Image 1: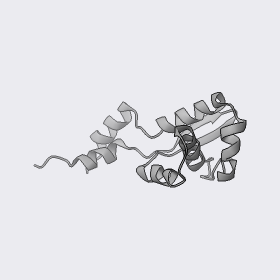
Image 2 (image 1 turned 180 degrees about the horizontal axis):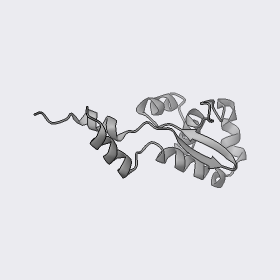
Image 3 (image 1 turned 60 degrees about the horizontal axis):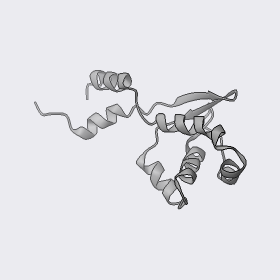
Length: 114
């Protein structure tokens, strides 16, 4: 019996489930952040990590129907007109949404027969 390939173990660990945060009375959803998402943001040549995070927020935040919550033209307002403290909960949740909890990962590995 051969050992399972590491790439298959990682696929199980990465659940891919949308996660919801209710923020200021609105439900905002995030999918996991992938390497392709990072590459797309990097093509925009962000000046620093904060701009990278805001661009990722614009890319990943959706409503219940999968519609974008923020538009690319709102980057300036998000970066300059809104206090960092207002965005921290969204940015933190977005980044944490990319990772399965230990329990989710263990369950996926145990229950997936592939």
